[in-house]
Amino acid sequence: QIYSSGGGCVFYNAESNGAYYFYTNGSPRLSISSGGVVNVNTTGSGTQKLQVIGGIQNWYDTNFNRSTKVGYDGIYISGSQNGFLYSPQDWVFWAGSAEKMRIASGGQVAIGTGTNTTKFRVLQSANNEWTAQFINTGTGPYGVSIDTTANTSNAFSFAVYTNSGTGLFVKNNANVSIGSTNNNAKFFVYGNNHGGTGNYLGYFYNDGNGAD
View 1: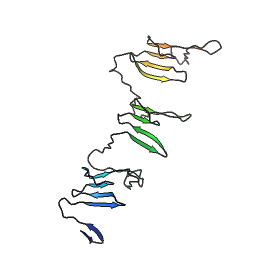
View 2: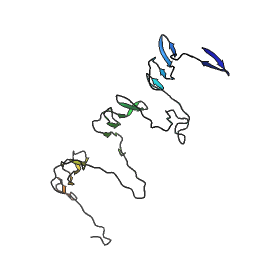
View 3: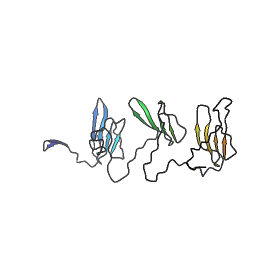
View 4: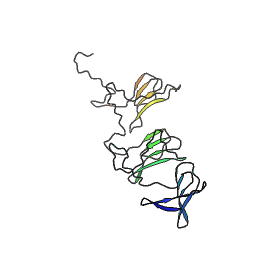
């Protein structure tokens, strides 16, 4: 039953199991069940209030992030419960015309690359720019913490690779090595500089001011 109320149009179905189905070109486009479940591009019996088969483009809400993003396109979720996104496969985030971030179904997060076997990976190809920055503006700030206390081997806890294939390495036994991954001492420096002024393996400089 369809009738007009206050200048609008009301669709009314008094049947307990009644539903509305909207078709175009012979295919289902929208259905509303008697329980208030809305299905887009399907007539299936979804259990959530809204079920969409296909992508959602340009879902617009002028209240999205009220303080700084008024008028932006996006999805705004309000309420007292936690929001969540679900996919049995990867979540892929695009910006511009390319993939920028991916969350794999196994929990791996990749930024700048879709290939990732570690839990977190960032790929940067810009010149004269850091790959990442961690900034702590607190009054007593800490930096970055790496905890490998559960590791009972002497594998690497931290590694910085250079274009020579070596760099700075810290093992789980607290041994530190520079220029080589082979280290059985607490501090080990390896170099192959030969001849010429200034080809030092190490250089320690004291500018005075009463320091030893």
